[in-house]
Length: 335
Image (cartoon, rainbow, N blue to C red; front, side, top):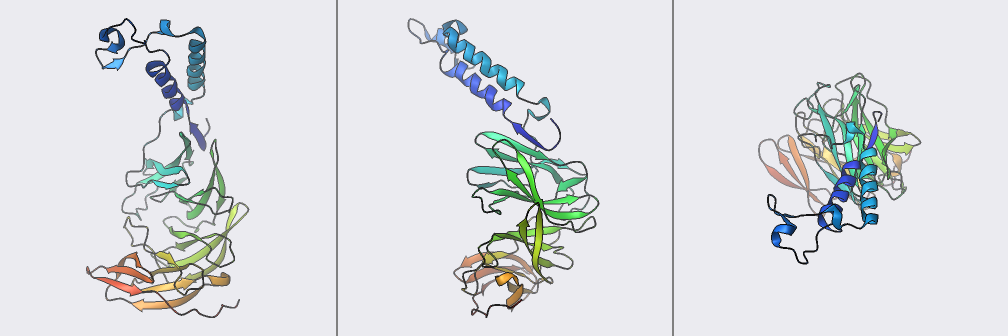
């Protein structure tokens, strides 16, 4: 099987067939038999005997086993190793995680130089696998599952970093029989430059779901909004001077998405680039604008939802503050 998408289904087929053989149709009934006849003494499991199976059942079992073995690529017969510090995300009956730890991209923005060479999605009992070529890694800790194209099915959104051009947002469709690349944002343009997603939502108020991310959160801190257009993620708007990550940290969530001005459109609450203040940014009507800012005593190290209209902010000195993010509704920005 060529590099890219794969389906690990043979193992499940063999397991299913084995369970049928050992646990149901071919087990001795026990009629006139002692416990020694029906139990494997070494493992304490029911014994089975092919002679007790009707010929039709044996034929079905033989075909099932043959199909399971024949449909499995030896190279993908085992579920690959998970990223050690990776997370498992779940949505709409899917589970996803990063796999294939690799040292081929020496950046270490998330605390070490171990990145992922692929990701896996569990769907309907099958493991779908997507692996990158050697010139790229997933520089991330999670596979975000969210419906970006509005078809009612979640896509996979991951930070993909090429060894020569740096990071980009990558979107993948998750089909019944495989994972297919869907769209990417432009790469930053040089290695060791990173992007950290904020989230997916109706940020413009138009009803179209878009993805927000901070490009180079430790340098320019450019908060950008992208919309899906064919096979590309196209920038809609940007505003510089913000961050959603502390370099070397495994915490990817230094931002909160919430409606702070009551206009029905989600806004983004996150630190300024120097982490000296907490700001609220709107992309309403496709225009980026800061609508609130609260100075902090110390550099922001954590932001979490605290309650209606508030967030809990921790600073590096150990202090914690509840910040009221509610602001009056501003006029609609003009283009």
